[in-house]
Length: 367
Image (cartoon, rainbow, N blue to C red; front, side, top):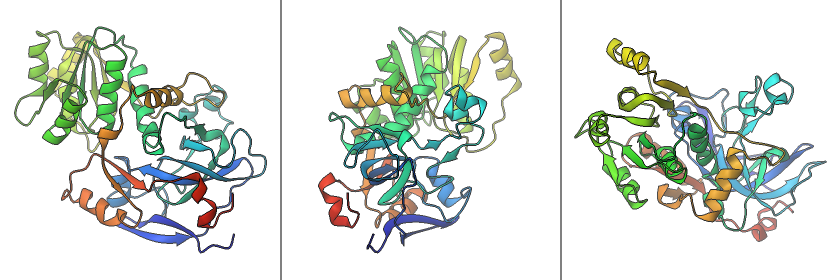
């Protein structure tokens, strides 16, 4: 294509990230080349880059992204060059029993943009056309880059099986995924949404979003506070969105009789549950609900992604206050190291730059 290559943030080894120039990816048949506008840094990206590593390295991380279609491989149908799209990052095999049932996130042999193959921390990335979802005019591309965590948060509440209308819901962890979950609970009719976090700045963001039942467990036991304001009844749904052992135990203590405890946060370490707390789970028939990823339909069904896109486009789901930093790829290494070392307090970090479709041809890839 007559161009020097694609700029990308490359994970070369654990704790080694650098901006490199890579060959321009060629979209195979049925795939598209997407010019990335913004890509969110997920909580799973940080340990992947700095402590645990990835399935393979070197790797371009990033699975929460949106952009513009720059080119199409042979047979790419349903989208056109210049279309604004968000990208479902899981690439399903299409042959296993789960895929035949349309349960793509349970695919037995899935691939994944940003963790198993190169993802969105780059100027360009290739993705299957079937994984592209059109971004309506009511949503900008920065908001569309928040679609993946928004869909994950929705899936967590939809999957727990509890009616939310008129119920009390507690969310442990006021990071981006927790605040998206709290917003979904409110949209779905929860009477009260109680949010717990040890970082006051995150609770301030929750307050800015209109939430009033807030607690910092470093000053007051969240479980005790919840039992107090619910007059001992506990909550119908307690969502653990931090991945910290203490918050999981607090979530279990906060659930009422027959309540649901939703395991949403990626676990940071092993959890030991006291026998008395396990006994409470048994006697009160509290249900522990695992959740992972989100539903996506190639046929345009009522999946989590389309519901989240509609909520973002309409303004019902608010994403902008969750974004604490926007940075270019060149700025990303220093910023991400600062986040990792906790010299910078961050919520959602977006990597990329504002993008107009008219700029595509000027960057060396002819539409």
